[in-house]
Amino acid sequence: EHAEIGLIGLGTMGRNLALNIAENGYRIAVFNRTAQRTDQFVAKAGDLAERLVPSRTIEEFVASIKPPRAIILMVPAGEAVDAQIQVLRPLLDPEDLIIDAGNANYHDTNRRAATALSGGPHFMGIGVSGGEQGARFGPSIMAGGDRSAFARVQPLLEAISAKFENVPCAAWLGEAGAGHLVKTVHNGIEYADMQMIAEVYGIMRDGLKLDNSAVADVFDGWNQGVLQSYLIEISAEVSRTRDPDTGRPMLDVILDRAGQKGTGRWTAIEALMLGTPAGTIEAAVGARGMSARLEERKAGEAVFGSAPRPIAQGLLGPEVLEPALLAGKILCYAQGFDLISAAARQYGWAMPVPEIARVWRAGCIIRSALLNDMASALEEQPGRNLILAPFFADTLRRSEDGLRKTVAMATLHGLPVPALSAALSYFDIMRTGRSTANIIQGQRDFFGAHGFERTDMPGDSFHGPWAIA
Ligand code: NDP
Image (tube, rainbow, N blue to C red; front, side, top):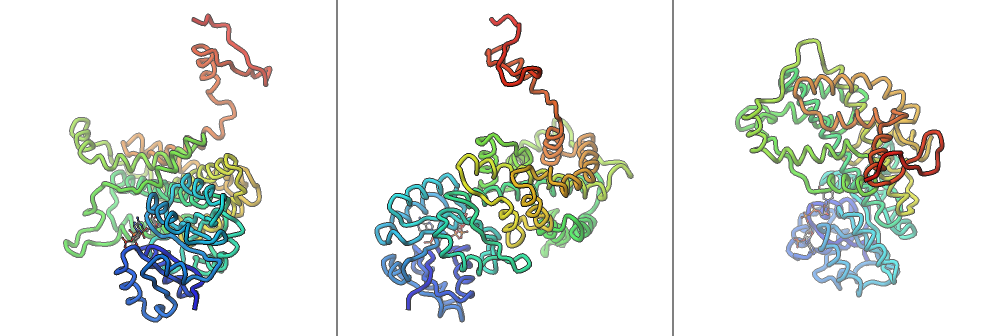
């Protein structure tokens, strides 16, 4: 009996995704470069093994799938994906479909999609979020590429995806690399969400001198309110947990040097390339980079003295940090959606932006209560900045004071808040009808005769009366 779908790459993600697919009733062909791993996988699959169709050669694997075939690749992004496509192409029919489910750079997906258009097989790039657990029990799936090909795998992708109030968190989000772009921006937002949480943690730890369990209580409290989200929930848990070996709080034994695999950085690069403001995400990526400079930071502390100073009682508390984080979050998501819209315009993709907020509501790392409201707001006013939607404009009006006070207090007390202050700057710029770019234009015209528009005669280009050297 033929398998209904195939999967190549039985690593962490591939194994879990394959079990999820089998559990949903599909027969799935599996193949791994190292055959031993396939054997181990099938041996450990228990009852689900009867729906797995393992192969030892790629030819056997392709032949075991029912045409028109759909094959998921779960191998490391980059060369491994190209190599697999090379191997598969001569074995597949033009109507078959290759789905890259790894964390590809969306420019690579654009290139592969373009190649696929000339003679097939069809190609899709899908972003899968939620880590190992998500892959096994329901990830958020951000699909991009061939829309007609998507229709063929839609029931399967919806079946294996996370559900938000019974609605599947899997959708087609645009042509070519659109799905991988959305996954990239998801990760950029994830960096920013985490960094802003780390900044308020820093204020609580070094400014308010709260101990770890008090910090955990604050996060727990926030998780009952507007900030309810997976990242706040796990922040509480991380803050409360003790090291079984030493009995010390885990947060006191974890080194302050954060790693990264690069998708946050891609988001910042893309924002710069597309000319859209994403300062909060850029600040978060920058902060990860600075965290790695442990020795340099220690040298800096030795020369200048430690930056953080305690904040006097009564000046700032968790009740102020909560709206600060809320405002920062809204402003950061506004930047993320704006970046996605800019890419859609750049590539002529029909990206359903509210649908993106919808697939993020469950299964992925940035899942939160707020995303449901974001989906509604983006739907009500298509193409408009999220902060201008009445619900979020209102929320920002109410939380602005908290953000301003938090950034001001933190700055005065040497507590670094790069992402929160970037969010505040974005907000202030976005509500400044008369910006300071008039002097930039004056400078540009002065040194380069670039010309400027006049406020009293818009449209035409003018030069100033300065003596050009
Ligand atoms: P693993 O390292 O666990 O597994 C990689 C798999 O790819 C292995 O089965 C390996 O086979 C195979 N492989 C590696 N190189 C090649 C190659 N050149 N040709 C053929 N097969 C190859 O990776 P993950 O499962 O963690 O990640 C897979 C993809 O999913 C990546 O793009 C990753 O970024 C993405 N992802 C990962 C998440 C996570 O939480 N881990 C979350 C979301 C996405 P072999 O056994 O022979 O070595």
